[in-house]
Length: 201
Image (tube, rainbow, N blue to C red; front, top):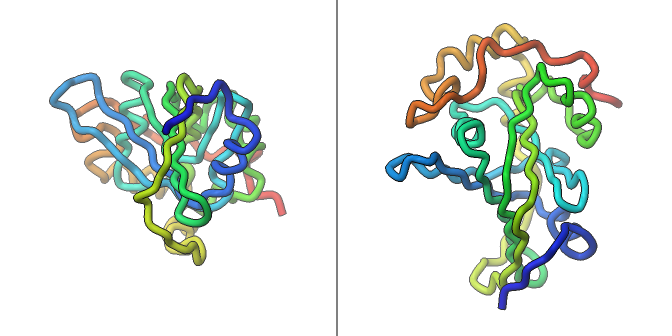
């Protein structure tokens, strides 16, 4: 039986923060538009900001569907499920906003991700989500799977990019500046990565 929560705290927060992967779902307002579902990993790239607000880092990639949908309508659902331990699925339904490199809030938000070197992953946005509905369900059919480690491929691919070459990479991709359905995606040219967000050892 599912249960609703008024805030993200206690056992619920501990469960969310312990997961190594979560999923995001967004869609355009157009009923014929493309629904997007994305897996999100990399330890340290997700943070609970307060009892109703979470954020995650949006790294370089060949699409920007989530950014485009959030810029159009803000709707987003995040989902975590237990692959180890007791079965559980948690969903946060809410409103999301992409915060870009040239936003005054950037440095403050990056303080919530002390273990991430943004230059190694081509960080392009921080997605901030305000929860409107928080629910969990049983997850009885989710299989047991074990976590080994994060893949090193993303960092090894994008660590060699400068701000200029990363912008060039995005410019060449068909669905970064605009979505599959033609909605505005990542604003280009890409602003330089603020120096205040460099990795802290």
